[in-house]
Image: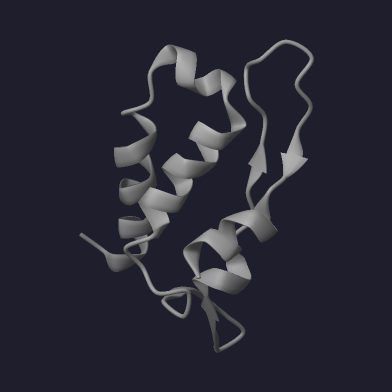
Length: 85
């Protein structure tokens, strides 16, 4: 498997473990992403752009929208990166 897909697979591995009730919780959604990306170093190359390597920490954005009533989408990239270290 191409290494660039390992990020996706790891996120989906933890995402599919969420219960239907879990997707009402921003914290549980965020935790699934933290667990999925936690096995990678933030400096791991995610892609190349104009002959420059782009590390995971500079390429990832997480906008979280739980399924709870009245929930609004929130950019939680900063919190994700803090949790990843």
